[in-house]
Image (cartoon, rainbow, N blue to C red):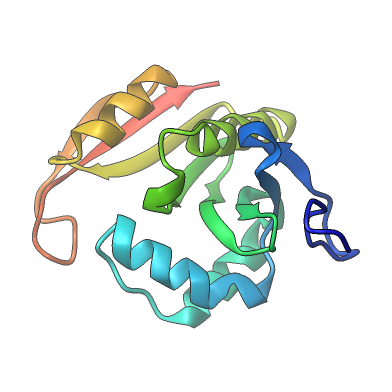
Amino acid sequence: MSSTEPRADSSYALEPIAGGEVFLRNFHPRDIPRLGEIVAEALREHYEPSLYLSLSQQWPQGFLIAQDRMGVPQGFLLGVNQVPGEARVLMFAVDGRWRDRGVGAHLMESFLQRCKSRGMARVTLEVRVGNATAIRFYTRFGFSVNDLLRGYYSDGENGYQMSRDL
């Protein structure tokens, strides 16, 4: 494999994003340690590794990974479909070195398209009240605040529930 070819295996297809430096694919269990690092840095949360695996089985196409050319995850979006006709973004984060390069936008666009293809009518998510950057990002994608969630995060910070129709 040359240094310009992205690492892949037969379990998923790669879709180039961010000028061909990052590739979109589905989740694989070997991603879990790296996802934990991204979550700790970007979301200030810590989850048991088994959570990623169990959630990935609920709707595998709703768990998107943005990997670099070496196959290392640099961002992800984990969505579930627990309510008929509605998707929920449970986790969404991009490594700090890859922010503002279109990685998050492409993850969100791809997720919303997968939701539409599955016939969903609505998408919801939660975001920290103090995360103005994320709130602006979600607003650009048509999300609006529905509710204040007091003490929602593990550190006691409030959250907003946001949603958008598809």
